[in-house]
Amino acid sequence: MVDAMAKDGAARLRLRPVGAADRKKLPEYGPLGTGCPAIERAVAALYKGQNEESFWALMNAINYALELDTRVLVPLEAASDQPDGAAPWAEHPVPAEKAKDLQPWTLRTQKGRCYLPVFTSVKMAEADKGTANRPMAERLLASAMQMALDSDNIDGVVIDPWTSSATLDCSLLNGLLHASHDTDEPGEAELRAGNHAMAEERWDDAMHYYQLSAEEGCAEGLAMMGEMLYEGRGCRKSPAQARKFWKKAADAGDVAAWVALGDDAMVQGKGAGAALRAYRKAQKLCASTPDIAYMPQVCLRVAQYETQYISRKKALAQLAEAKQGFLVRKEEGDQTAQSWLDETETVIRQLLERE
Image (cartoon, rainbow, N blue to C red):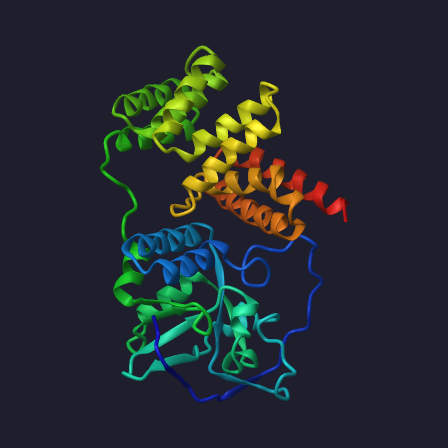
C-alpha cells in the first residue's frame, strides 16, 4: 500500500478535453463505464482481510482483468488549458494517438519511491483534486504496467491511490505480465491437448484427451467430458451421462460445470429457482478466482436470472463484463464464444427495452 504520497511531475504541455461523444445506453466495460469490478472487489477484500488469501485473490483479479483487455485511466504530465474544475478529463480522456508520446504523471512516496497511478474508473480518478482536473489517457492495463516496467524511474504501479489502493512493485508486474499460467497439475496437459483438438473440430481426439484428463482427476476435464456427451461430439449423445460428469466436476469445484447444471435445470423444466441455485454456487466459487474461461458465463446468468430484478444498473454492468469476455474469447478463436455473445446481446436488448 502507499502511505503518504507527494504529487510529482511538473506540467508542461497544455491540452483541451475532447468533446463528449454519444454513449450507448449499455455502459461499456472499462473506466468510462463499469470500471473494473473484479479488481475493485479484490482490493476492498484485501483491506478487510489483510492476509495471504486476499493477496492472491487480488493477483487472480488482476490476471482476469488482463485477460479481459481491461483499460484504465493514466494521468498525464500535461496541464489543462481550462479553469480549475472546468475540464472533466477523466470522462473525456486524451485520444490514444495524442497521448502516445506524452509522459505520465507520477506519485512519489515519503521514502522517495516513484509509482505510476492508474484508475479503474472516472469516480476513482476524480476522488482527489490532484487528478480531478489533470489530463488523462485511457490505456490498456497491460500497457500501463509495461510502461512502468520499461521505465528506469518508476518503481511500480498504484491502483486507485485516492481510495482503497493496491501497490504493485515491478517484480509483481513482471510476474503478472510475463509468467506462464500453465500448470503441471494432473490432467492439465491432456486438457490443453483436448482444447486444441476441440478448436480444430477434431471431436474424436478431443474426447480422447478429455477422457484422459478426467481419469487423472482434473475437474475441468470432467466438465468437458460432460459437454462432449451432452452435444454428442466424438461420442454418442447422452444428456444423462453428461449430468453425471458435470456433477462430479461441480463437486470438485469446477465453475463451468455449475453453470452447465444450471442451464440443464432450465432445459429439464426444473425452473429458474433450481437454475439460480447452481449459478449462485458458480458465482461463489469464482469470487476469488475469476477467469475468462467461465466468468463471462457467470456474469451473464446471474444478471439474467437474479440481478436484473434487483438492480437494472448492476445487471447492465454484469452484462457489459460478460460481453467483453465473450468478445475477447471470440478473437482468440473460442468456437463457443459467438453463441454466448448472441445470447448476451439478446438479454441486453430485452433489458434496455424495459426502460
